[in-house]
Length: 167
Image 1: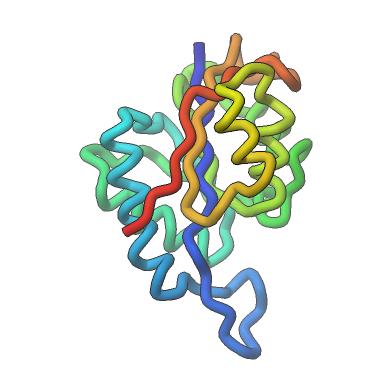
Image 2: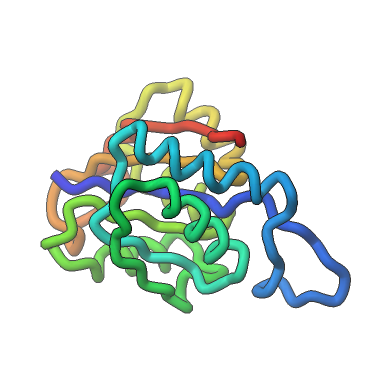
């Protein structure tokens, strides 16, 4: 069964006059992104492929997290992930090759939070309740999916992991 791992970008800065797509990580984000990478490694959530939004804050989050991993997986920066809603994200997941056993999405809210809630048919109640309330910056969630990516449907995955790393 494939695993879908979801990483929300780390805390960003809001510099005046900088377009949203070009906002960098802030000081807390620069601390938390490496902690997210350490968490991925410790939890054995190492991806076979990473799909990452091309926004500056998501690219920085992934670069800092990836530096903490024992092996560097291939990464694709996908323009459609920037500002994507749950259905757009699900389409990107469904387009993934069946050879990818563990896929990692690095992106933005509210789309990531909506995707988790759309897919999770089962989960520890407390974790799903927490995600429903908030999927904070740097948060990591993992879902076990029932079959190949193209066949992934709403309410069929199991939320197996949720954590909020802080550096």
